[in-house]
Amino acid sequence: MSGLGVDNLSFDYGAKRALQDVSFDVPRGRFCALLGPNGAGKSTLFALLTRLFTAPQGRIEIAGHDMAKAPRRALGQMGVVFQQPTLDLDLSVHRNLTYFAALHGLSGRAADRSIEAALDRLDMGERRDEIVRRLNGGHRRRLEIARSLIHRPQVLLLDEPTVGLDAATRRAITDHVHALSEDQGLTVLWATHLTDEILDTDQLLILHQGRLRESGTTGDLRGDRSLADHFLALTGELA
Amino acid sequence: MRVYLVVLLAILAREARRFVGQRSRFVAALIRPLLWLVVFAAGFRAALGLSITPPYQTYTTYEVYIVPGLCGMILLFNGMQGSLSLVYDREMGSMRLLLTSPLPRWWLLFCRLLATTAISVLQVYAFLAVTALYGIRFDGLGYLTLLPALLISGIMLGSLGLALSSLIKQLENFAGVMNFVIFPMFFLSTALYPLWKMAESSKLLHDICAVNPFTQAVELIRFALYGHFNGPALIWTGLVAVILLALALWGYDPARGLIRRKH
Image (tube, rainbow over all chains, first blue to last red; front, side, top):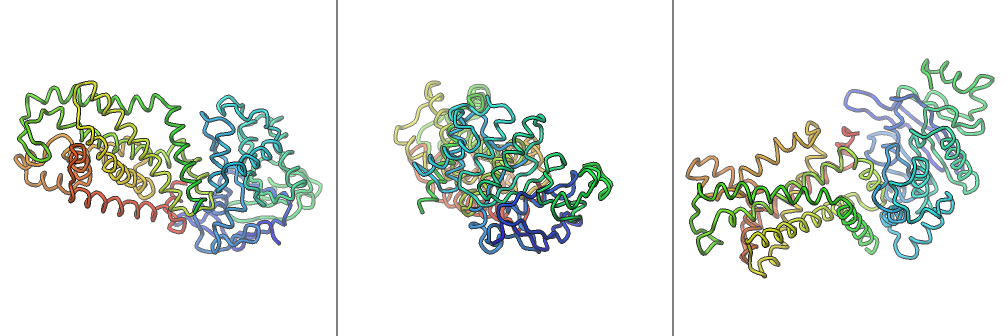
């Protein structure tokens, strides 16, 4: 069964084409990086994948559920970390998580169990009662990742999750999500414009001007060049 | 069914906690109508004589007359602010998070609307508590019959904000909404002057005021505050609420993609 499948997806903003015939498959349990410069269409793709709006043509499948035919089942199998922060800063870590758990229909003891498990997975258990405003940027991001896993999704989407973080924190979070995918069999789509977040063993999609330019394993695609050089040669833009 | 309730309660609780956490917002929402009451109404009392029309059974001072209108004002401002902040500025992220819930979108939006309305209603009661201290008091029962009127009016005005936020691209900031929606709605209503007074100055103005749904909401509130029932106002407010809510849900339909423009 496929983790995440996209087939012939196209999308226009009025006369402007944002995505053109994008197709790819991320097998279950795979970490897939979506690399593209700003304006490549990454955010549009994420909006479609999270059903903020739908495309008139093309198909999206999340853990075997067709987004058009069974949107609620597809959304139920998906965890999302948005580029913009979506935490309530004045509420505690735990309150933020119970709110999200409830959005997925979890309450009471079932919610508490899932929340504890998610916090532990991200080593955030001790910060349970802290007010989010007091957390640093790295911890807030980690909290958002923990939150996205509460309802035990099979597919995790992250839209440039390391924006604004320092190098060490960026590394820690990138490693963590790689480990999650490996240990828990989580299918991950990680959008970024930073090549150093991508491992040679990761699946790689290069998106440029709304089209998918390349798709494969990072090590194979880049050959002897660094990924940054490869990307530059392919798109004429700095990654 | 239980899942629907879990989501509703969570959204209500979140709004309530945020509200408690933002005391400045509460105070600001309270100061605005109080300024109107204390400054504007005091100045106008001398200039404006009011005759005895239902629901009033005796001569009424201007300060007493505008209290229901100011209740409506709180609902109007909050409804717009609540719904628009959902799409603009800080709340966009939390809106996107809300919409990733696997529950139907109409339910999610309705819960959000109900939550912001509940907060507005609390603010109206806080305002009425202060006016009571100021000396303007109503019947105990009136405060109770007021509740359903506030809820329906609040939902109507919140739906208007939600519909606007999804449908109109040009209203990029709150100032635009102030000028083109809030002020016309407020001034062309019975919040500040009774309809018959409007008719004296202009027939057209009177007609515009009469069909303005905000007028109907204010009249619903005014009658309810005196324990009276205003059928036409209820029907008109309810009908407009349903239409606006439908329009808002249509605007947020992912296939219509009207929110894509905001993206």
